[in-house]
Image (cartoon, rainbow, N blue to C red; front, side, top):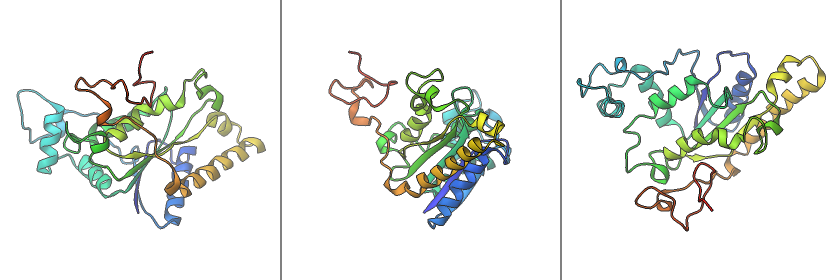
Length: 252
């Protein structure tokens, strides 16, 4: 197995950095060849712009999808993007490690998605269950500052499953089988008081739990998403189709 870890945290010594190393070590122990994209360390530019496309197909207007596909098919994508595309093309498994910031992923990771999942890797007919990466897997590992109950469906920080849904659905859109995520909660307080044995033990337990999660990766059942046949000609859920998310549901 070949795996890619996409790591989005500016501090190598952070708990996210430790979890990234835990993922790498666990996968390597299973015989995987692991590559890491450390977005902050590599200075990845998250902002898509015309400056990234010197060989433009259209010079009258900057149309992102047109230029991304033109560059991808002509192998003229910017060096950073070209390198990242090579990595995801080689990977059977992609792991995303990042903290929850402002109820979402860090901006640098969103920019990575914007720039690396180029038009051409997906098309109007190559999406969802028919996506380019069908047969490959992706998994998300996150940390959150708040306690676990605050990320429940009644919690003040919102349901973590819904917070992660945009990323999970993006991965499904690209064809990946999306595995159940791993989450470490209350990390900010635990790190602040890590001198206390209880908090230090909790961080150790999270590392051990993540290691176990990754060791069980071949037995994890992918999350469920709607597929092409669930939508009608207007892109609406058919009356008899299931609904797997509060973002896409039937109104009763």
